[in-house]
Image 1 (cartoon, one colour):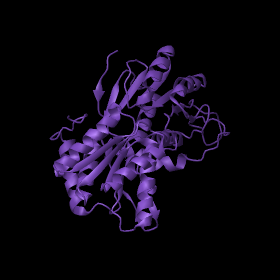
Image 2: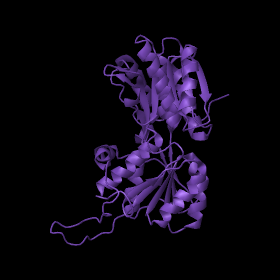
Image 3: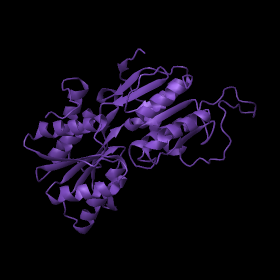
Image 4: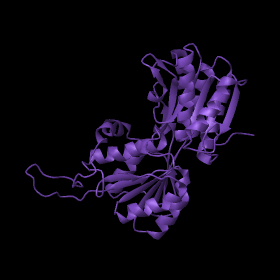
Length: 361
């Protein structure tokens, strides 16, 4: 298989305008046909159906899987599809043993394009794609060599670099933390970028790092955050899926107990501002490092629908392609710090700074 790597410009406006309207469709609605005419005549085009399988974090992880599902819903909204067979859908994995079963289930239900969400889905996608060469698949955050699979990667290290700058410039104690999920390449990229960004603005910054080994254990995230905050860390960046929800829980409890406590969380994948809400006036979310998973899903779904499925290719989205970025801080990051962040963003996008994918030992 011939494989090419390149970046795409994300269609963020499309995704943003479509996501909210896609929620709440009824499962028992009739699968949609596209291009129905105004007089009620028959449709002229068969619907192109799309579905996804989550990893163990679940579709409501408020992070990676949720962002992908929002993209699937946005595609469905755009093409007037209904949730269910012939439209759009998802299956949730309780454990890694469910991956192949869920993928095969969606193949049997005749979805035109099936997404596997997350690095841990690679082996399952590889196996199911080889058994179903006439079906199309997309794999997020990993690569397999198959002509009927498009691989989607992100330069997480570039967005995490900006998160590191924000954390180091915000910290009053000179101690910040990184909470990772499973120790795999995609999380290593978050880790490496965060360290590089923080040290770029404060070479003496103290960075505590802990991999919890899970993406679905909020209790582990809470315990880890408790240890870090208790040791003097005042800003934690998590890249741990639903495990990161525990980091938010710990920060909010501390802030609720002591309104003057300096505790911040930097969210991941999606804008996690709401996760940091303590009350109507208080929020512990400093910012979030966004990955355009939702918009990548919409882009690839539309390309496949239009006969331009990029099978056998690896698509890479970075700062230059608007594939990663920091969310609006809602004023938590002061203008002078934001200016520094923007300067680094421009340098990275132009290639003047190359952010490593691994932490240098």
